Length: 366
Image (tube, rainbow, N blue to C red):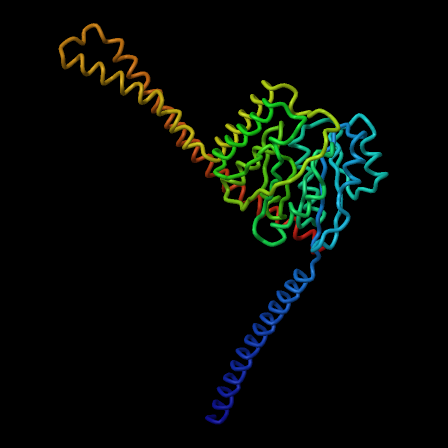
């Protein structure tokens, strides 16, 4: 009986050791497979070719599009493939036909005109979906010298930055009026202050984005993307710099600059709105300080008369001071609420970026 009992115990111990050994063997195999898969993915990334996609927003650009396309580079050192994309923003002419005959790789079509900002965002989305590592945005009127595209993308290729904006020689542009030049400088100065950046030519549409930076872009206004994206990138601490570029002779009048009044009004609304989205507390504190300080001043004046015993005829000052202080406090409260909303917006942008990366990376693996 003792022998049988010992044999049973020995069998149980052997089975236990076998189970433990099996568990460790399975774990080790899974670990090796995971490491191998990671190494394969790393190898794939290392072997991945660098792709540049040049996008051009178009609205009735049949007369100038071919000139702009012909000027684009066909090869750049360090870039394995260059592809071309146009955004047809509801054109009524044969813009799409001109693009297809020239041989563009992708066409994003809008059935009706949605504006430059919507077209820009649709172009970024299409470029990322088609595997772009770097995206260059330029105009269909051949305003920018396409030979500077290599200069534009070089800082991104070297890993120094994620966004590069071409700075035009504003003062040397002959077909611009003196007033327009001054407005361009003023607008860029306001954007620099709002975005906390040093971009000298904020309205320039000649710019390059890394894949990661393009995924983070969100444009709310329908007028233009140029100002809002700089404020957004600056406030989100996205690496950004500027390089000097050349411009070509004017082929057609600007469609964004219809009149000075309209341009200034729309640009200021865009800048203020973008600043409110990313730094609302700072904005509302400064706005609330105005009535609050005036109210305090009027209140001190009433207090002086009250101490002097001559407050009987100055009750209106007390009422006005109370109203102004109350208005200032209410504005401060709105600023706190807006700041909480801005924090939630930041969280939503982080979630959006993660979802985009999962979607786009999954498509690339497929």
